Image (tube, rainbow, N blue to C red):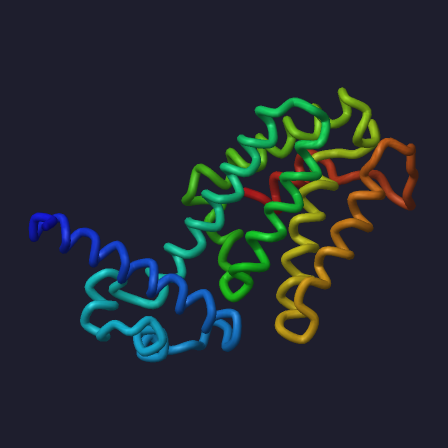
Length: 203
């Protein structure tokens, strides 16, 4: 039999996962206006248990967002380690999938860019993934990190807009953009974002 302290820790961890899963589901359905009582009810925990772990809805959403950022950062690190030229596309697909799983709090992700150092790390890793893809000839030499970041922001908008009405539609949107990032040269009506413009948006 597990010691009482270990059982309490296990119970707390299970409650946390149930709460996060319930919050994911309800935020996706109802948006940021969802009540803590509704989350507790779906999770099968008491409101006291919920508030002991998450003293406010903002604290709960912050935890969900931190999980998103961490999963995206890990995906970037794993993609970069392979060094096969496909890492950028794999990273973007995994990131979009993470966004889709937690679409209810996506609007808060960029709020963390000044407080969570992993957000800046993701940007730096994405830049290295682009350089790697260009070195392998799987991304256009004209593509910039600004193009990659804009794609991530666009995906957020598509995922939030399509919601439950057309789940998975973001996948086609992403593949169209990936086709545009590949090695064929391209030209547009205006140049890519400057470093100053990128900094103004992402910092």
